[in-house]
Amino acid sequence: MSFTFVTALYEIHREEHDNRSFSMYQEWFSKTLLIPFPLVIYTEEKNREMIERIRKDLPTRTIYTILDEVPFYYTTPTVQHIIEKTDFKYKIKHPNGLENKCYEYIPVITSKFKWMMSAIESNFFNTDMFFWIDAGLSRFMNFDISSNQYNNELIHLLHSNNQLYFQIGKENELMDILHNPSHIESYIGTNTNFIMAGFFGGNKDILYKLCQRSAELYISEFLEKLQVDNEQTLIGYVLPDYKDKLYLIKNNSHQNYMNYYFFCNSI
Image (cartoon, rainbow, N blue to C red):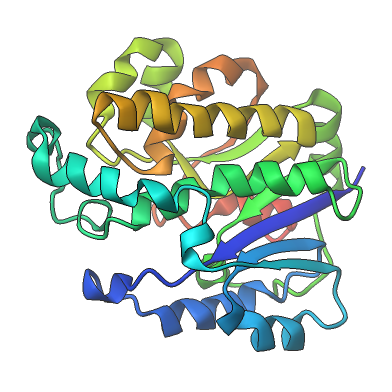
């Protein structure tokens, strides 16, 4: 029973649309890099020195690419067209939200599903389980994330029961789509985070299938139907298929990724 973490960081100039600069994300990323677990990183060459310095004695495999090579980056013009030029723009609940102003954002964050698939296929560290962790997740952590401590009982349970590990985002909305899958259509354009997609994972085979299906639906249910939303809404199409395989951590008032605290035995 072993696991690999997967993450990614690319500059998309989001500071032009909100107050989060890339240097801010690099600072958070530098702390996330302290996690002591095997880590697969997809990123740009500009982050090489930092990664090699911080991860020098830790199990790491880094894949350096340019932004154009991000799996779904090629869909950026389509996303922009949908948001700007189609009737879908009238359905968007938060037109000034980052998803609807920074057209690279949705393609890049949705690429996490393709990166997870690639990491599982390569399985550089020959592990049974995989977990996605956002590059900036350290900003939510108020404990020493470099400590080699994790919840053995939880990991064993997830592994033996073949469950997918998520933190709930919007609980009422999540329960709605789990019990009424057809309701998902009413949420597209609302940026509803059914789950918190900054940290999640499970056994490699079931996780691969979930990520593969999510990536397929990004094309068939979003782009081909001229609608878009973030990855936390996209996954709402898939979760009902795994309703009996979800290990869900309840949210708290600050949405501070309690599932990672629990994973690290730090609650």
